[in-house]
Length: 117
Image (cartoon, rainbow, N blue to C red; front, side, top):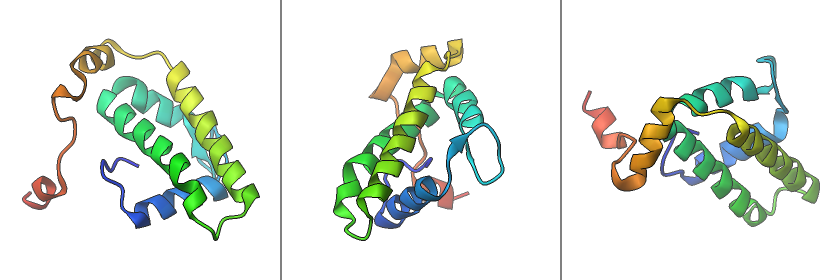
């Protein structure tokens, strides 16, 4: 989910991950909300990317006819749960300072930049 421009495969992978694994506080077959909240509470860029991507996934769910209504409901509930936990998490001073800068400064590296390493 730390991909700024999701492609179709990323969307499908995220939907399936959220459908198959509950949100919880452990690592065993669970999406560990505590770890995600700790990381996003300290890193504004990760917070920005993750919250944007979760919202995007939620918006696109109806386009996947292979999903049942129950699948969509489960995924939306898990997205809502995770976003609520992320928003309720206290943010560090580092996060707040970076948040004040916002989108004016790019917070991610393009794939091309990473490929040149």
